[in-house]
Image (cartoon, rainbow, N blue to C red; front, side, top):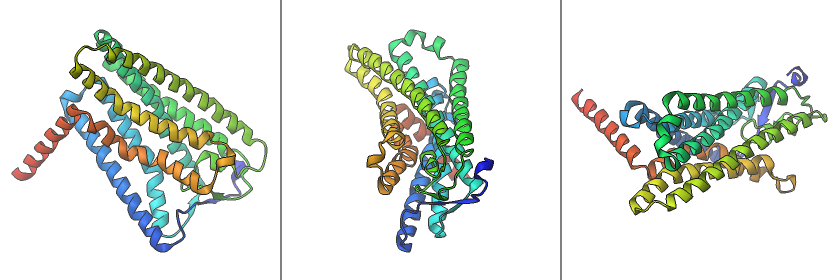
Length: 313
């Protein structure tokens, strides 16, 4: 990172320069952030406390909620602070930390979504082998691999990005420190190293995507062979939330990192980054709880117990 030592801070892109709209942005992001904290926190607490939910599917969902909390906490609070205090500055170390944490959480989340696709595949296509293939140790290893792979990706990208000579400017055209925007500040051809590293990451992500698609092709073929309508409905209820989350994550993330420069603009980059960095952590708990009766019943039991204890005290 010594090549970039001349830059002591970066200037992030504000959503607006109007004070009233800055405050509106603050309150909007605060509402989204609190919704994400409440939704993901409720899922984590419910799964941890309810013995009926101590299964592989909910174990992975708990990990997903932890990653969602981490990713949204990396970007939104800083953006809220900047809007509230009418500032754009973020320190060099703060920017590097934000790049590392955000890439870590979203990379680990994508790997975990791939593992969750495998969980759905085994549950529906090979139910008799579910306990063998997805025992507690196997689940812990798969979740740990997802977290470790995300950490390794983040270390490589953060170290490579901030070892580049950044001398064009210190203005980041995004509301948080994002690798594609940092690369635009490089003043030498050495940025191609990071581009190639991004290409490798995209290829790995594409491999995960192919695995997810193949898994769901097998899943839907198996579901359509289920004779009872109730069985098909239960299988679709198990799979559709995950499929929606994966689709939202892949579409917005792919567009952000692979869109052609000809259609790039500040407003478009801002909107797309908002869609893939802020929206999923806030709506994932809603998506997973809407069609999951077992999870809704567990949340209801938890709320009843908490309410009873509050009344007794």
